[in-house]
Image 1 (cartoon, rainbow, N blue to C red):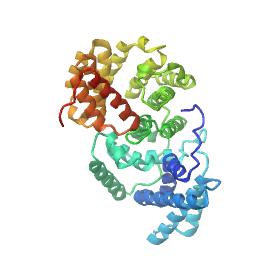
Image 2 (image 1 turned 90 degrees about the vertical axis):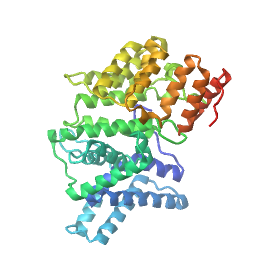
Image 3 (image 1 turned 135 degrees about the vertical axis):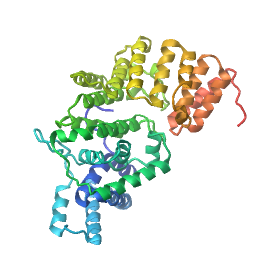
Image 4 (image 1 turned 120 degrees about the horizontal axis):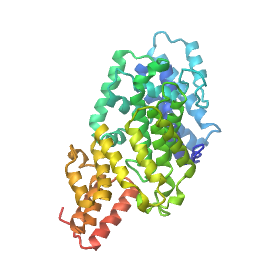
Length: 435
């Protein structure tokens, strides 16, 4: 991930449309909702989707326009205007529509210095999704769908849930928004603070999906991480968002993104942290992340983002894998598990337990995870268990765990890595059991 501007979009029409869908979903939805109203979130999604489909058809036949962003925005706004006419929405006249079309034309996302108002449509939409009348989990689900363009399946995997449950939650949330009559206007200054938790949670999950995609051939989706970093940085320019938690989250993102260049080898295969070439880590990003962590330490607040950023900082400042202070990392995980317990946190903590106390203690820790059944459909549980069993030379059990993990993994590099682990276990005496 570069420290400056994001990578240029691909040249092929299909790839370019995908690029703009991921990069501009929030901005486009925000502009459409500003025009159509918050109660028309579903219509805004449909209009944006239709604009993208038209882009794919027209660009494939007639070539990509000089300003693809402006092209998609103009098509979406024309579609929205037609929808308004069709619905005969009260209080919206043609001059108002034209004004909206003008003010939503593409422009660089900026926050005006000294202004209390959030100027960026994507960030504004994020605060709308995190309205206090919406339940916290529903806030994040809605933000990921409307702002970030996640599919229902991607959201379900992020929440260890089913697609049906997420779809039902999205439907209920949109119905609640319609019934409540929420306005696009958002409060100024410190009145924004109550919405900050949901905003940070959505940015965290957006970054996580980029850091480790839930499906597909690519492990890394750097464009999602770049958008999460951009929005978090923009959030810090606003008084309501300039908090230790926001600094801590941005520190976590930067320190994690700094390791991206070493996560895959030259063949695209996944490399574990211990096997990465640390000379490839992005030192400017590490320095930026550490500076953000210093800012996060001001005051007395301690959040989950502080602890996770602290863990990332320990990894980034260790000169080599052998020098990593796993005792400190385990203490961080102990505190994180106390502050915000979850099966995933407990599983990550077990990896640190293995480093400090050995595989048997780690397997005991995994067996004791509350709600462990929620992890049974997650490949990572079986991959970690397989690695611990292999380290104890229980190759048959390790092979079976890796086979389970391989059945559940949905990302190409992870599947290749698990295939190698399975072959290693089988080659050392582990025989597959019958299905």
